[in-house]
Length: 294
Length: 302
Image (cartoon, rainbow over all chains, first blue to last red; front, side, top):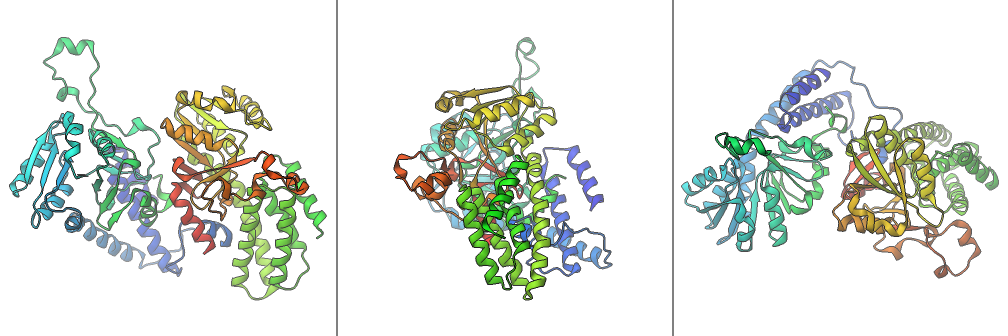
């Protein structure tokens, strides 16, 4: 386990904004703990987590993992293969739930380009007729790519600029977005512009649905707002050709936005639909508390 | 062990170690009572323990003592289910009781470790009355070389805020004591609110010194995060829907209740803050959202 932990630390240090790497490492660690526990003879129900119950009934401090079991390695590899199969099927699982959430003649809004949302909408388009408005998500304008893909399936698509989000919101029935990461309190780290979209949706009481697979759920809390931001070259905002202006001003190009949990209505993941307040429970199923800090 | 001995042990605990939580002192006193109990059956033990807990609540009627007592009773019931032989059972109980007390003494440090990353450099914190857990958290933040300033409410009628301010000044933290009425005024200047709790109820709300509810409402109105720090033995099986639902025996001091006068004339000492106003709870079971609290309680009591 220590080996995996050190490797995990190296990988996350290399690219801190890619939280899925850390998530997968934590899941592997949990799998190892479970397999060990199973071989060690503990019952399935015994809780690995801290709880008041455990405080009162345990006969000693936490167990050590030193007893060697020859079949442990084989079991762990098998469990990891199962996990891989699950990962490959996540987008399909999410898309299968599309029909329950999208009804005919609805106007759906989305932002940027998310492959999960694309699959979700395409699946619904096979049986229902609806319109999609895509916010282009400047400065990278990935919304354009999304619109092209959707219109190939025959979905009536409109592209508009981010500034018009609030103006159009009154005509929208649902907002469906993807995200980069889901945090432990149910908040999102998503592309820049999503917070604006979420606030506009809240103002008009429009449901905000987030389609994201479970591996994006990260056990971190948003304690340092700035540490999540990834900035890229401001070339997109103000090109380097505008040299004289550049000398007098500061230009920033943040990639991600923080969206607080109160603005989100529903999370659709490969295991079904969940409310943001339930995220803590999903987290306890996927990860072990000792692994939250890699 | 007579009731007087019990009360004396409890009071001695609180005197000798002013830093100990009252629930822990209660549990320690009850453990001592258990060791000296001469009964022969579990039922007898449970009855005498219930009487002992009643005695203790007559001395100190706070929520914490009540939740500590409940937890101890639960502990006895759980252990007795596993072993049917009484003397063996008693041995195990005493052993586990000691382990429990060691674990619980580490809980404040665990909470401090979890909470201090949430305090940023340059933060302005608002806190309420005197809480030893909050003090520990701020101490940990100072140890990790963070600079911040604290506003403390005076917290009448016992001026607990002044006590807190004195303790903070010893740690070299810049402190300002403000009037309880000035919370709405100061809220725009603070970055986060950090309070302790006397009890955490099933809905995820908290019971704390009077004035906490006001602070929570102001914080919500101005979009400031409201953090609560509490050890897990403070979780109590109450589900108040409003302020009236909190039992009278918690609201007023034990001596006031004994005199039997008209309680409508008395000022309550605690109030209830609803879970919708709380952002996060930091406990030794981890960082919890208010909805996770009832899950924890269910795991224990059902």
